[in-house]
Each structure stands twice: as C-alpha cells, then as structure tokens.
Length: 501
Image (tube, rainbow, N blue to C red; front, top):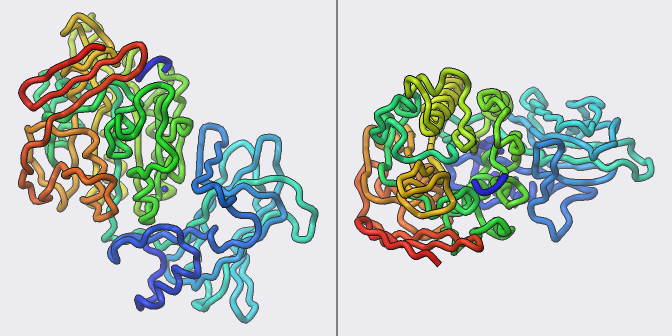
C-alpha cells in the first residue's frame, strides 16, 4: 500500500420457456453455460424510475457499505412477471439518503386472476444502514403472475428519495454450482509462508489448505505496491495495459473485471477491503453487488481484523444459498507491524526485530483465514467452493539496504504466495515452480468455474486442470510509475534487469 495510504432461478422445464422468461425479465447479463447458475435481476422489467440511460452500474454508499442500487423518489412501483416455483426466492436491500426515514415498502405477488399475497408488509426504509430483505416465493400458487414492489403511498406527490439495491430472483443453491473465495493478504512475502518452505510457523492453516490444492511457488506481482497490483488481479491486465499505475489512476469504468464477469453469470458478488487503495472511489467496486469498506481508514490498526472476518461471515450467511464470489482484502500484515499480544512470540520466541512482529501479524491473519474456512466447512460448502489465496506484493527487511515496499523491484517485494484449492477442479499436492504472474489468476479462476468470456488471451496458470504444466512464460515486466520515482524491470526467469529512471 502506498501512503495513508453478490442460481439458477426456478427451473421451468424447456429451453424455449427459459429463453422466453429471460426476455421478459429484461435480463442484462450474458447467457452463461446451461449448467451454470443464473440469477435474474429484476430492475430491467420495472415500471417507474429506473437507471438513467447513461449509468450502467450505479453504486450507492450508506455508511461504509456500497451497493449497486436504483435511486428513485416515492411513490414508486415496479411490476415483474414471475411464475413461482419450489425454492424460489427474491432478495434485495433498501435504504435512504441521510436524513430521510419512514418511507414504507410493500411487496406483493398478484396472479393473473387477481389473487394477491402480501409478501412484505410496510417495512420502513431508513438512512443508517442497508436493510436486507429476502422473500420466499416457494409457497405461492404455481401460476403466472407478477411481483409488485411499492414504495411510498400510491397517488401521493413525489417526495422522499430511496435506494433499492438490485432485487434478484433466484433458486436456492444448485449443488452443481461453484463458489469462489479470493483472499488477498496485503504485504505478504512469498518466502514467509510455510507452504513455500518458511521455517517459522506463520501459516499453519493456510499450509493445510494449500496442501489440498496447487501451490505456485514462484508467483510474482507486476509491481511492489497495492493499487496497480490489485487492479492487475481484478482485470487480468498489467499496469501499463489497465492504466492503473499511480495514486491518481483508477480502474476505468468500461473495464471488465473478475467480479463483473461472475456477476453477469448470476453470482452474488461481495467485497470487503481494509486497504484504502482498494475502494469504490478507485473503481474496485466494478462488478460487485456489494462492496464494504471494512474500516480502511484504520489501516494503521486498532481494528480487530478477526472481528472484521466475523462481520463478513454474518453477511456471507445471507447470500450463501446463491453461488457467490467473495473478495476479502486483509491488511493486518501491512506496517506498522502490531500483532496482538503473544503472536510474535508464537513464531519468533523472544520477538525483538520488526520482522518478528511482521511474522506475528502473518500468524494472526492465518488464524482468521482458518476461522473463515471452518465456517465454510460447517456450512457444507468446502467441496464446492474454489479458494484462492494470494498477496499483492511483499516487503523489504534490509536485503538491499531498505525497508517497506513500493520503492524497489527486488524479489522480496515482487515474489508473492499463491495457491488455489478446488476439489475435483485443482490438483491436490501439485507444486508449480515456474514463474507465474498475478494478472493470470483471474482468467484461471474463471476457467475453473466454467465462466466467461475471459478477460484476456493469456495462458491460464493451469492450462490442464488435471495438472499438466504449461510451457514457460514470456519474460516478465515490472514497473513503478509514480512520480518522481520510476523503476522498470524485466526478468527472463533467470536474470533480472532493473532500470532506475
């Protein structure tokens, strides 16, 4: 880091009927493969105010929680054609601008013969936090009708604004669908994790998970600080291709991302970030239905990162009956190194040096990752959840006379840990020792999930999911382009040339 630095919807039998329903619902996403989850977003069929024509992905923030949402004034009404089916649900969230409260919301299902069922009474929209709503349509009559959303009192004059976070119609989790959890541990060096041979017990939980998947022992970031590195992870593009290379750049609004491809395929997409370089203001919300700033202002640390993970798990519980993509950006390992009491001693005995406290932060973060995965196991999702763990860059501890990161392009700041775990999709116990690039991970994950189109045309990290290793890659290029410092480097896998400009 530099400076302060969200299903298959109800099955209705025949392919022709499915295509007909998709057209009625005004679905905007690309048609995924038949076996993939499909979530139908309903705003395209709504009457009343909807997205402005110039806005493709409007985002609204309440508190620290940013979501894709419609902004309109009450009274407002939306009608969507629906035929109820077993396990069919609709989920959405509502909120209001600061200072606005008391706007009522009602949701009905009305059949073509006029029968009306009230699904949601007069819930009150508030301005303090998003209110999540999930409605079960499985008990409704199995006949065609319409889902009706009403905000405010019909016939009244336009009044208070409100926000409606994209309502989605879906069927509960299909056992054939696969989730994705992508965890980025900020500032984690590739040689300070047990699954890469580190002698200290910094990562026992990640070591067990890595052993159940494939480890990339020579993974490299394209740079040595957070924003361009994380942009490469999300877009599949190197910094010079994405244009994200300094504090004044952001992911372009027209750029597809890992999250946007999965959202278009019907996934619930949610991000939690504790790093101020990875926030909606920098374009990192692209494709995420929900993006939570997990107290990034406290990157210098009084926030309990385990508590952040617990909060995230509560929210993940709301969407785990849909295929989901969760991105979790953890910042504990970033300086200032301040592990809770006892963690540095756990790995270093009598901790005295900065690296001892750095390793203690790694051990504390590892416990959080272990806790998260135990909850995934308890939900019975571990066998159908693809897990990838990676870092954005490493850290210097005097190897070349300096410290921190974002200053040089030596191996200690470029080599990062990376593994992918996915039973039946990723070989267990495989270690790939050739150089691999962080930017290739997104398309590799999309390929393993059976989703697309890909973000780039680069080879995947696992060309053959059964374990055959692809040929050696082209030379790697690295860059720091943040005035006044400009450093470029190239590596052929054996030698590296660094140019200081």
